[in-house]
Amino acid sequence: MSFVERYGPWALVAGASEGVGSRFAEALAERGLNVVLLARRHEVLERVAADIQRRHGVRTRTLAIDLATPDAATTITAAVEGLEIGFLVYCAGADPNYEPFLKSSLATAEAMLDRNCAVPMRLCHRLAEPMVERGRGAIVLFGSGAGFVGAPNMAVYTASKAFDMVFAESLWTELKPHGVDVLGLILGETDTPALRRLRHERGLAGPDDPAPGAATVDEVVAEAFAHLTKGPTRLAHKRMRRGLRVLYPIPRNALVRLTTKLAAKAMGPTD
Image (cartoon, rainbow, N blue to C red; front, side):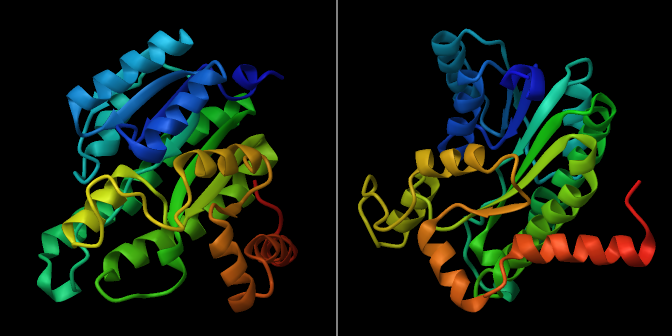
């Protein structure tokens, strides 16, 4: 199959207004997929969509939706009703606050759980079923190296990213036999506009200074496409991969495959 036949005709990219999300949307358009661009900022999305359509000749749609609201997934699925979504990218959920748990409001924590856990789970449930019926498709869920271990000022964020990573691995075990590729793409420090803003706000750098040692947006997107069919987890920063080899001598992907075999032996194969 061609890329469009395997994963098209439409892709839905959450977090598509800038950084990795917008570059991922463009990479999908380069490969011939029409793209639905999803983020909060309507005007920014419209500019990204117009640029993609002008340069790649694909169709685009924009959805200005706050992913931190409990009904976001329902609103999104209603908006894409009638489109054959063959590729879902969930590239949202960064933590712009970096504050101790008790200094943040409970509402802030709950909004992060909605954005990072509940909404991607609901979207996967609603969009993966048609992919399974067609026997083709892909889901890429963005995680973070912060999800490997707890850390100060990121209690809910680290926990939510642990959920994203394990959820992607579990989906891979269930959907891969049905022709649907699932990849949990784990980001380390990545030189995005959001990271540059955060570093500037904290007095660590100028407003346009690149983050030293960080992966570039293009490197992250390239990692995703290079490992899309391999799954279930790919660390998108080579420095992070080196460090985790010391902490985890058995690769996560090997552990997932092992537990899949053990589960099938104990409980029978996945339906």
